[in-house]
Length: 83
Image (cartoon, rainbow, N blue to C red; front, side, top):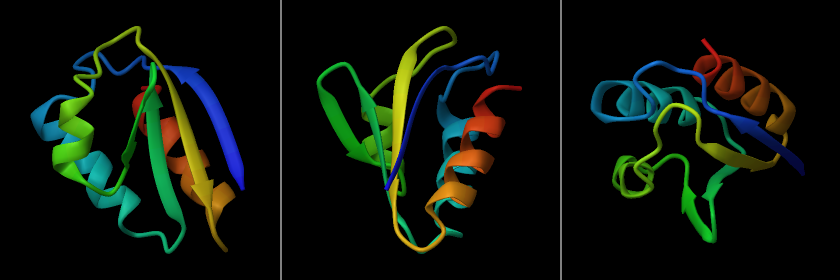
C-alpha cells in the first residue's frame, strides 16, 4: 500500500474535464485507488465520488493505492495534479 499527501497545484483543480481525465488515468491501473479530502474518502476511479469532493487548487488531499501497480498509479496521478 502506498499513501501520499500533497497539495493540488492544477490551476483548474479537479473540476469537470480534469476530473474526468484523472478518473480515466486511475482506471488504467488494477490497484484500488482512493482519495481523501478532510474526513471524506472516495474511490478515485469514480467520477461522481471525485466530483463530490469539490477539489480546488491549493487543497490538501491524500491518494491511497493498494495493489500490484500502486506506486506507478500514485506517481502518475500526483504528477497530473501537480502541473
